[in-house]
Length: 313
Image (cartoon, rainbow, N blue to C red; front, side):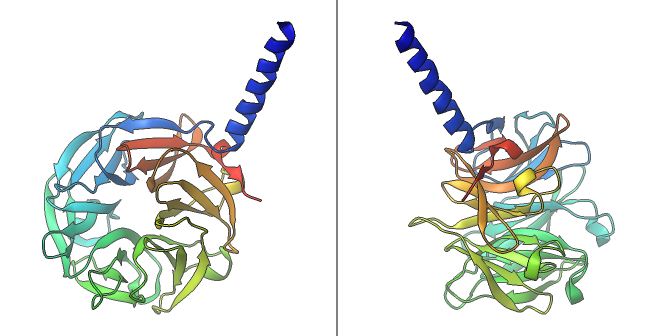
């Protein structure tokens, strides 16, 4: 009996070790109550705004310590991305910008939400689907604008990276091939290899991550190994304190995991679990580095840490 008991202990220990190394170890639920959560943005007070891809465009507020999300406003259209505009961004400075698409005419829409949670229309583009807005404080002639990925609406309206000025005027940085569906976006740090300082854009319909320079030139940065039917979603760069992930690009892969990509374009790590990740936000919780990410399959916001990254050999 003692030998059998020890065998069980050994098996349990091995299982725990394998479980920890797989990236499942400490991924936990941070918040519940959303429907189809996309991006996560931390406010000055420490709470979080979450955009929702549901039909009414809920903007959720999640307490700084997590828990149950509450809807503070509805944009009236399905949301993808959001960000807090800098105070210097014209009349809407300091407000929360949301972007997405309205039905039935496939019009890309952007609105702002002020401190009283009043949502106001801000910009739009026909035959477009805006997904991920990012700030571009230093990006050639687009410096100070918001850059936003546009998935495109049809064969004659391919995907692109659009720009929105403080006055709400819409421009275009780059246009993609019709086979590419731009989704996530992040400006690469200057030291991130050959693509440093460019805008990296993920393909929702494929495995590619593309580099877009301030002149609008598009080139392939890398490809991510995928299974049939998968695509890439939001992307973000990790700050210091993330071990293997520090300074590298984290990529949400639909229905499966979050990949860690280095400046050479190689997948070097992975956070895996039973989730379909979307928006990524690096923050600090209880004095520890944390990654909050949306799980669109359950409507939950999950939390991971540096120890959840399993090295990919």
